[in-house]
Length: 311
Image 1 (spheres, rainbow, N blue to C red):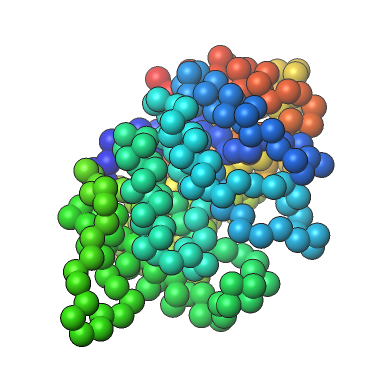
Image 2: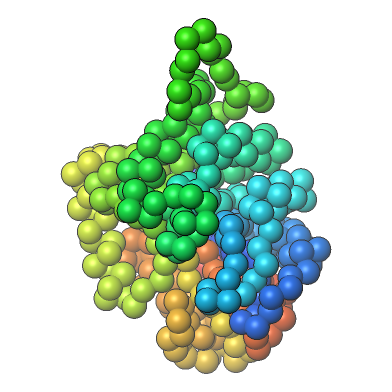
């Protein structure tokens, strides 16, 4: 791994902390994105390592997430122009529903605006009805993901290459502008229908969602074994997206909630220490603002939690 921004987020034996946008409560469907930009700037100033942006192409009353997400490239462009130090990460671009050359163009554009602070996280999506809406067959998800990854990796790795879908007689040789100054790190978010060995060979790491500690330790052991087989001697990162409901009482014990914890800051520190010891290199916090304003949570985590992990 040669990217300085990737090294700032993922490093052997260390755990860094980021956060996911937008930050909302469970019932909020309309998001004030001016406030989200302000929260991103606050996280940047206070030393969070990464801002994560989701790709949610369509909404439905059948989906559990009611939030009206911006197009990820639009939001990433705004974040690139309004932050200075923090890594920007897509978590994750739905690679199977987008043409890989469009993804590459977006990634190079964001990396240029952000002065190479961008990490390109991609996934395959987990909502079969969306495949039908976009004219895709979900049964082809695994093969489509691999093919798109190959085209995307060629385009965002220096020297950049464009692999066309078709090459008719007399077709010109294409390239992407602006030319990337450095390779854009590629991160697998979820499995994309691939084996962990495939992910270990092709990705800088593996980002997954929160599980109970015994299950997560098993997941990590599987990942380490795959890295030893497929990329022996090389560092490959392991990261987790975790929901956080941070209470005002610093001694509130950690209690399980879907995909994360309700806890006070001391319980959060204990949870994160355990994750670091078990081999997790990065945690992005999906902060819920049901009980407290998001700004208060961000400031408390920065003051009392980040110093433990970002020395």
